[in-house]
Length: 419
Ligand code: SF4
Image (cartoon, rainbow, N blue to C red; front, side):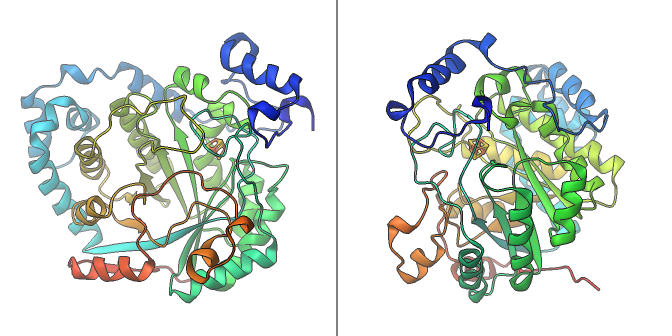
């Protein structure tokens, strides 16, 4: 492992002087950082033109030019054009939230009925070689690191499966050195014994590696682009493979080329201008859908939440109203796409938004490592790794299931059968 990829899992004060110096230079001297638009060795280039289309549209998007008349026209049109979508994301649409919600609800009912999917995430490791300045898992942060053994993974999965859950999303930090593709593949094979639907949220990999993971049992791949603004991205991701913006952008396409059934997309709303990031995220899905019409595509919509040991970044103000506007606009523009609302949002918000446009929620969530048993059965705290961010809705699977049913929705645990 060379200095570039060296991982330090200690507090800044305890870093070796050379590492501390490097960290400060990365933060303060842009010329010291690598080119975030240049692929690193080993990163596959697939030559897709989608990113150019998305960036061009995002750069040209001036949301202040849209008027009430544009919004009304967008709401009355049978199908939603890109131009209509831009109007629905604009500040001019804010007073039309009620109408947008009604339209979104109708479209959701037409495509998904009253179903809502429930899944749980499982972090199997929290080692990370990237320096994303807004994340508690970053390589310079002083947190308890852990990577579950295969026995621990199996045990955690047994604890989760006992609740009745049938879909799992497996997450790692982004460290090939600590959580290599083979480790993830073996973990997926274990998951296959307990769950019918398996997603992964890991570091981006090449097509052959996605193919291998699909053969191990992965159904879908989620990758957060964080922000589509490449300049802003550069200032937030200072080191590691994640620094390479275009390689990350093409992840979902590589995953589909590797045979994955589905792909998930997201910006972390609040890192940059959320209207532009929402436009870019939806267009990313739109163009992938046109190129891979068989793929099951979904959107997530996390907002930046407080994280441990980090006072360097202040989330921009994306309130619940703004989030609701974005989600309704997503639904109207992309009627077929799944929309996942994470436990970063409150129970009240999730109860409401699942009746309008969201189709998937997580339950029984812990962002720590190996602490499902601690939560359910009293394991000692020092055996577990720290959490990535704070969650807001901590409902168990059973409570979530009951709440969805009581709200008139039909909870779904799995809708896919391999023959
Ligand atoms: S956001 Fe992901 S890649 Fe970045 S530091 Fe956190 S875990 Fe690592």
